[in-house]
Picture (cartoon, helix red, strand yellow):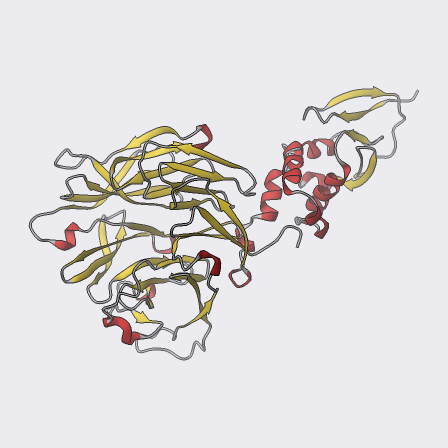
Length: 478
C-alpha cells in the first residue's frame, strides 16, 4: 500500500508555513531541494539552505520532505539574487540592477537580512585605497553635525542641534529623535538603537533608545565633592566597559567613571582631580577617550588654551590599578587632535602649531627610552605661530590613520621595512607614507569636523554643511 507525504505552500502574506496534504508516492531521499517561487522552479541543496541559519524559512524547507516543489508566493527574480548569496556568500553582479530596498525587504521575509548586511557592509571589506564618495546624506536641519557615531556594520547616528538623525546599515531608512539637549557634544553608539550622549553644558550622561524616539532609558551622574552637576566631556568604550569623562559644573573637579556596558553600573573611578589654585594639569579634563585592547589601557587626552599657548596631556590608564602607566605632557606644539592605533601600536597626533602628523611607538611603553614624538612631516613648523593645525582631526582605523587639514584628508600607512635595520632601542625602523585623498571642491573651502568609520564606509562632516558625506570602498554586486 503506497505511503503519502506533503508539499509546502508558503504565502507572501505570512512567514508561517502552512502544509496541505497531497497524495504523492515518495521517491528516494535526496539532498536536492526543489522550490517553486512565483511560478519559477529553483533547485538547490540542503547544505545551501542551511547557510540561511536555523531561524530562516529557507532552512526550515530543507528539513521537510522533498517529493514535490515547495511553493513560495514571492518574486522569483529577487529570490534568485538571495539564493546566489546563500551559495557564495556574495551578491552576484546582476544585483546592481535591483533596488536595494527591495532586496532588504525580501531578505527580511526569508529572515536572512544578516547575510545581506554581511555581504554589503562588512568591516573586512573596508579598502582605504579604494574609497569613493558615493552619497550625501541630508540632515534636513538648519544645524550642522556636532557629533557622529557608527556601529561596526555601518549604522550611523548624527547629532545636530537638539536632534539625532539615524540611518540604518543600508543608509536607505532615516529617522530623527528630539533630545533634551540644546546641543550634543559627545555621542557613542552602544548598539544599533542605543546611544550614550552628553554635552558640556548639560548635567549627566543619558542613554537613549532611538528606536523609541529618543526615550531616556537612564541618566548617569558623577557625584563630585561639591555636590554640583557633572557635565560630559568625552565618552569611550571597550567590549565590556563604558568610559565617561565628567567635569563638575563649577569646573573645579573632574574624573573618568567606568561603567559596566551591559548593566550600566559603576565599576570604578580613575583620574579624579580636585583643582586647587593654578594647577593647570589637574584643570584639564579628558576630552577624548580611546580603548587600547592589546594593552588593556584607556587613553585619555585633553588640552587647555592659555596665555602661554596650548597645553595638554595624554595619559594611559590601567583600569585595574587606577594608575597612569604612560603620559605625555604637551607644551611644545600641543596636539590639535590625538588618536591611538592598536593595529599599528602607536599614538598619532596633529600639532596645533605645525599642522603636521606625529607618532609615538607604544612598544616603548614602560621602557627607559625617551618617549618622544616623531614628526612625519616638516618638523621646522613646530614653532609656527600661525597655528596651522587648529581644527584638524585625526582618527585611526584598521592599519591606517586619517588626518583632515582644512578641506583635505590625508591617509597615512606604514611601509614595511627591512627588519634587520634597527634603531638604538632595538626596534625595527618605522616609515609612514602619506596619500592625499583629495579636496572636496564643492564644499566651498569648508573644513572637516568629524571622521567616523563603520562597515566598509568612511563618514565625513563639514563645517557649515547640514549633511554627511559617505565614502565607500565597495559597491553592491561588484
